[in-house]
Amino acid sequence: MKIAFFLALASLGLATNPAMATPLTVDGDLSDWGITVIDGGNTSAGGSNYSGLRTDLIGSMIEDSNDTAGDGGYLGPHYGGQNYDAEFMGWAVQGGQFHVAILTGQRPDSGVNRYSPGDLRIETSLGTFGIEVGGGVGGGAGTALHEGDAGSTYNLNSNGYTNTSNPLLATNAAQVAGSIWSGTDWINDAVTNTVPLQMKINSSSINHGLADYIYTRNDPNSAQHSVIEMSFNTSIFNGATIYGMYWLPSCGNDELKIEQHYSVPEPAPLALLGIGLLGLGLTRVRRRG
Ligand SMILES: [Ca+2]
Ligand SMILES: [Ca+2]
Ligand SMILES: [Ca+2]
Ligand SMILES: [Ca+2]
View 1 (cartoon, rainbow, N blue to C red):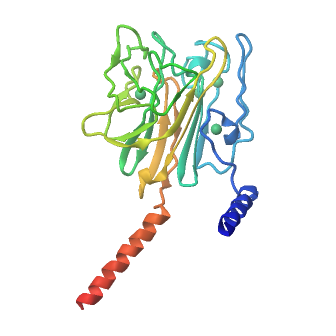
View 2 (cartoon, rainbow, N blue to C red; view 1 turned 90 degrees about the vertical axis):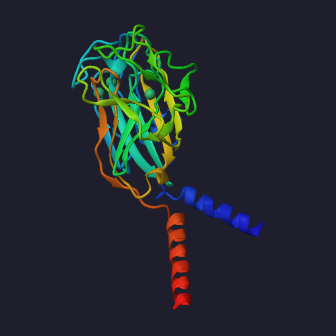
View 3 (tube, rainbow, N blue to C red; view 1 turned 90 degrees about the horizontal axis):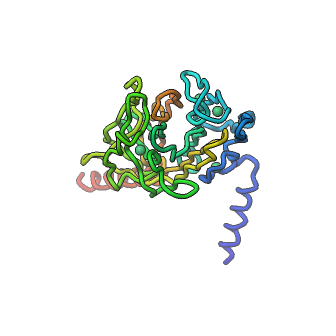
């Protein structure tokens, strides 16, 4: 009892210590990232506020160029309107977990003859990893996609649209939203055919686990925003260097990228285990001598 009380006091002390970073939470709300998401209406433009963006991120990219409702307008680098604006991507490490957030006008269920969301691509010294974002034609039920919901791998026409004459490619049932893979096939964007857009697992792909994951929906008739937020254990990339993270809608008109190198530290318990095994090895050598 006394120990439990002491631990409770200690954790209370940690929680109230101002030096501790505000915890990041996978909930579809980006206030924990320091972003105030401001939606527009049918005719009024929105315009999110990034001035309070937290300063402890490993990397981030902001390119929020058009908050007027609809498909028309200039995004920079290309045209597409708020419905496809890729606006913000951020990446942080907290408590042994990677956190990634994306802010976009791209709904998960944009439907046929429209553009659809790509998957998250992570380039590392151990190769290319992909995290299934879900969405596409249909896009699933509910107000948001969560980890374990159906994934999708869709065909595109030459404009980058998903449409009824180009049905979904067969997506392996294991490729659920939030699932993390290496050794997958990547399908390039349909317009320039140069940027890997979405992944498709094959018989030799490796599943590295399931992220805590959410992809919110918005109102398709106004200038609103969808949020993709996820968290997964850094041990997936144990000892690797991460080179960059990439996400784009299927039109390829707008791309978010964070090309920040980050060496993933080995988790402390494994490092201790390594020292322990080394110790055993030395003992054995000594006994032989
Ligand atoms: Ca959040
Ligand atoms: Ca925008
Ligand atoms: Ca943009
Ligand atoms: Ca996908």
